[in-house]
Length: 196
Image (cartoon, rainbow, N blue to C red; front, side, top):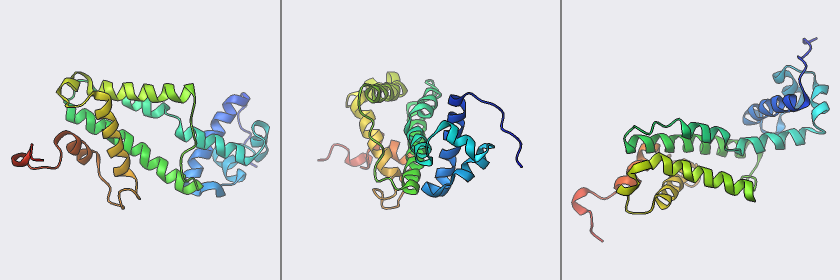
């Protein structure tokens, strides 16, 4: 018989179970069982049903957590503003692409064809926060760009997304350095710059 789990408030227990479920979803998809979740969390299976009504409720909470921007925001804040622009951008694209690839893999595992919809003021605030963080990574170098910083960041993020998506990129991953080089320098030789 496994040792009794330490007591937790229901919100803490739910938080623990959601984190555990998310890890197991990445491995087993929706086939994960409440028994596996309980074992991984170090609790009795019945403990799960003291905080949620069903496995599906726990799975949906875990999927929602996977799409929450928390860790993404924290990692963006860690980018050193004193690094050269190219290095800052490569770090930012690396962070986005790691997130995108983890998201694509989870979606495949749980059978999602698109992420859950996040509409409303809270989702708008998150998008605005990410846009501000991206602009902050560009920082004072924004005056070196030929487009407004928000447009530059939009294009950079789109290329990072498509370069990391296994279907859009036809399985040919476009890494952070290549994404940044494409956005900063283009793909034309220096002797053909300006040719239309």
